Image (cartoon, rainbow, N blue to C red; front, top):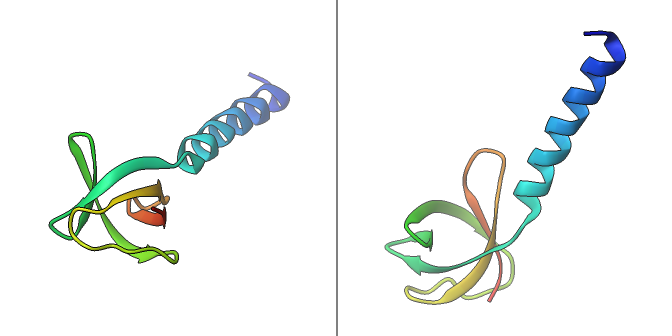
Length: 72
């Protein structure tokens, strides 16, 4: 594999990761965590929205696996 092919493969992997992380997920606040389907993610940040128990919210996953609540 040449340098150009390696650079292309790395760019493709990075672009895919960025696209996956930038998608917002719809879920519910349960037990202090963001729950989407059968998965739960801790959250430490919320952007101008109510994070009370049972609220439906939109969130994006950060690079470390936490959720960032971005809307209701």
